[in-house]
Image (cartoon, rainbow, N blue to C red):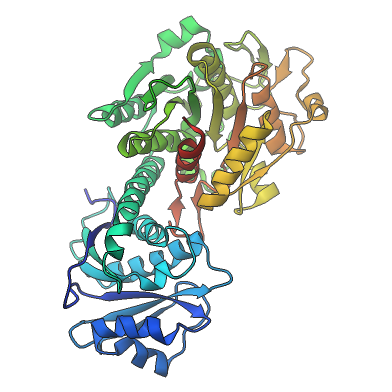
Amino acid sequence: MASNGTEFVFASGGKGTVAGDVLLVPLLSKPQPPLELVTRVDKLCDDAVSELLSVRALREEVGLLMHTTRGGACRRILVVTLGDSQKINANEVRRAAAAAARWIIAERLSSATLWIDGLTTSGVEQAVAEWATGMALAGFKFAEYKKEDEKAPAKVRVDVRAGEAGHVDRVMGEARTALVLADAVNYARRLAHQPANVINPATLAAEARALAKGRKLTCTVLAAAQLAKLGMNGLLAVGQGARHPSCLIQLDYRGARGARTRTVLVGKAITFDTGGYSIKPSAGLEELKFDKAGGAVVLGVLRAAADLKLKCNVTGVVAAAENAISEKAYRPGDIIRMMSGKTVEVVNTDAEGRLILADALWYAQQKLAPTALVDVATLTGGVGAALGKGAAGLMSNDDNLAADLGEAGRRTHERLWRLPLWDDYRELLKSNEADIKNVAGKREALAIVGGMFLKEFIKDGTPWAHLDIAAVATDDNGKGPAGKGATGFGVRLLVEFLQRHGA
């Protein structure tokens, strides 16, 4: 089987002649780069950059590339535009880096030198780390089941150079940390891409056990019999029509043993979603393997927490099931008594994610005593209708938690937009035959109704937030640093949240 793309490895560049197949020169295009800055890099490439700029001025569009082979000792020069200094931000740096990474892969190069002075003077915090992130995300390609492409580079070494002595050493630690985090994002993306004949609840549990091995993570898996004893009938019902029964996966990380805080992250992992008897249309059905993206994000965050040795306590809980159709499958009209004791009338079997999350959220509160509880799920198509691809939906019962998550989203460009959970919406969940029903039965406030349903299973006093990532878990236009396919949205956001507020 083929590997998952190209790995970019960053190292401190030496002195003297530039090594590598290409010299990467990121520059702001507005205002035009100052002469002093260009003169510095010209020393590495026999004035090739100034000659290139004299022929063709930099345009404002982020990620545009200008290439020359007239670099003296440097075999090739690639000038990468960072755009307008008034508009530059971390995400634009990542986009520019992704463009450079894709060019390197297309040219089948195995090494590069990155001149960082244009990044460190851009005004973006930790710009070199953001560049490393962009290259790593762009390097990912899900190709495990394709014939190996021997011409594509498996690894590219990037030597970092700067005009100021000692400047490289100051940024290399940040860059290496960024690459560890990007690896966790790409891990979540790989899991999301795995087809349903490979990843089911049992094999996802095996993946979690493998993740824990060799890391300071403790993995616990609750099988169907244990779920039944706990009364987790929502999670069991969704998976009862499938060959592989539901399970609950728990990963624990203790990085702040003296602290009393514990963040619990709950992920939805529907390994494939047919919609059940409320069957989905056939168009695009193959993409329903991505309905496990929330669970993949939670596993990615736990991997990052362990690998980065974060000073926090965090537990990941992944509710895993396959929503299949068979003579054993649950039906519209069924009434389920959930772990909390509340009864739910099933109006639509395609609203299954909220059923498995409700039990998982109650389990987390009963067993884990969270000081903050956050669930991540591809829950509703309605969130895309409301927000498009610009942001994930955020719903919360706690203003401070919502604000902290929103700030983490702003800093990572994994943006969140808060939607209301007003009592007025509770009317849409009223059932004539059970405590509540799982959908409103009308096309009204779809994303909010999903959040309102989950709120029914949150105890008073538990700070909780729901992230509906259905619209942003995948990207079909390829304009972001991650390109097309699974994005891993939520991994960097939640790691940022844990770093700032987890201890």
